[in-house]
Amino acid sequence: MGNLFCKGKNYSRWKRRPMMSFIHNQASPTHIGIRTVEAENVCNFSTHSDLCISIATWNMNGQVSFEELADMVGSNREFELLAVGLQEAPKERKVATLLKEALHETHTMIGKVIMGSLQLYLFGPSNAKKSSITELKMDKQSIGGFGGIIGRKKGAVAIRINYKGIRIVFISCHLSGDLNYRLQGIDTYPARNLINNDLHQRLHGKDQLLQEAGRGQIFNGFCEGTLTFKPTYKYNKGSSNYDTSYKVRVPAWTDRILFKIEDESDIEATLHSYESMDEINGSDHKPVKAHLCLRLIRQRRLPPIIENSNSIINSNNNNNNINQLSS
Image 1 (cartoon, helix red, strand yellow):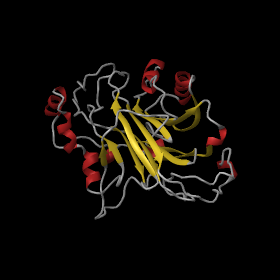
Image 2 (image 1 turned 90 degrees about the horizontal axis):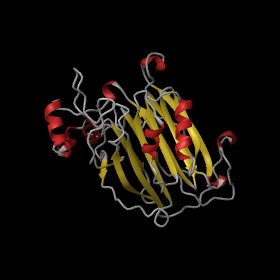
Image 3 (image 1 turned 45 degrees about the vertical axis):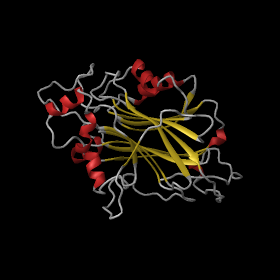
Image 4 (image 1 turned 90 degrees about the vertical axis):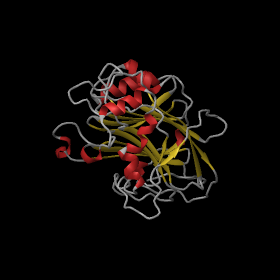
């Protein structure tokens, strides 16, 4: 299962806690589960937002080509930050080189974190001021599989950045076993029949991720765009046909992008798109992309952040008027 999360909260100081701790929240009588939001298709990139972010997640099944990575990041560059979370990716050096080549005209890599085949890359504008970034940290956590010694590593990798006074955490995770959310209560052929007739919205109620979130077990308060696209797994590689192996797996939305703004009185988030890329056929998963824009509603005057100097990049002690997002 491949997912990418964008999460934030206003704090004057960030306190470290286990990276995966927010995934399994305790059930609460006030839980709201995952909030489904409609995408607003028009993005006024330069006028109505303080920061626009493009987010992509893709389980690559060990395959990579420049053409497909270039198609995934796209030619529309109306965003400042691009976060790319990859699962079952080939060697990091090859992937990083191809991503840089695809984006070299407009964006440069500002951070990456690698845990074997689980990879997360963050790009920013090539012409951005160095003072735009006042903090950049990476983290990773492996789960099961003897720490990834056997087979591909599972777990999560994360990048936290303070960009233009907005603190954001990106987390890409690859889940397995009981955490690999599928469709429940329907067989493969009835599910495929609904999909083939463009009735896949009728499958939303059978999605295990939404079911567990609705019970308050996971991702309480996170948001996700409406699942208007077809389930992204499992396809025959090289095609857009669902699995025809002897397993004939039930299609499922195993590739998701969630986001959370913990203090919505300070920051407004608008989702402008949430889609799969059906034309990319190199894996048994389809990539998923989201376009998210943030607008500062108000600004607080906070004291300068004091952290280990090794974790501060181009800090500006005179810039105290900041809003922050952190985990």
